[in-house]
Image 1 (cartoon, rainbow, N blue to C red):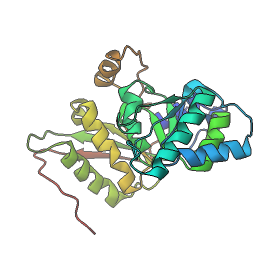
Image 2: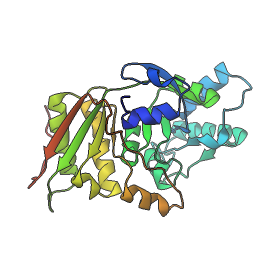
Image 3: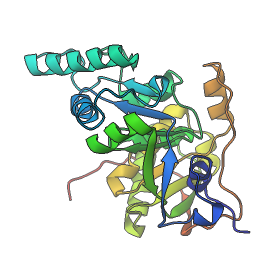
Image 4: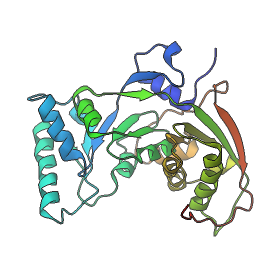
Length: 277
């Protein structure tokens, strides 16, 4: 029996679809662990929810979070009004709202322990895939899908192909994880990773801090990739231990069906900057 990639294993645990339906290109319904909305899209999501599901409750108030991070101080009348709408709706449905100015919503999800490895999270942010740095399947979603998710706790997903990337070698200061990310991105962009998931392995990954991993995975969007994953390891376990959260160790199966496998050597990696095309 062919094994599963990391993203396939996460999807498999969140769907009623049979194992034979878990393959690249297929579309399945998934059950969500966390649904979020920001102050930028939150008011529109609320309007759609109230229009299509008048008088309804959300699927689970403990699994929905508003993270106002675009206009954190409401510095004009429109944004003050938008944030008021969010707070009124949140109070009616007993939904958590993070404090204004407390940070970027996608980062708060792991910094405050709202989500953990193996979870599936959607929100109104195209860079929610940075959560892959901690083994979380995060994806951006539009207003209509978020309103639907508020009501049902579900979304659909097209299962992507997965590329396995092994990073070898060592680099030293002043080279940083941003240089690593830009170099890796260049290699992957030349190959073409549009719509694909990436799994990162190797000694280089093992030595990266959580912040470094977030930096690496945050740029996958810029190459049109779906998500970059760092399988859970000691660093991830220790990070969540400090939050008093036990996690499951997740990694792709050895016999998983990868679209491609690459080894990238980063010995003596220099400094990189992204230039206009």
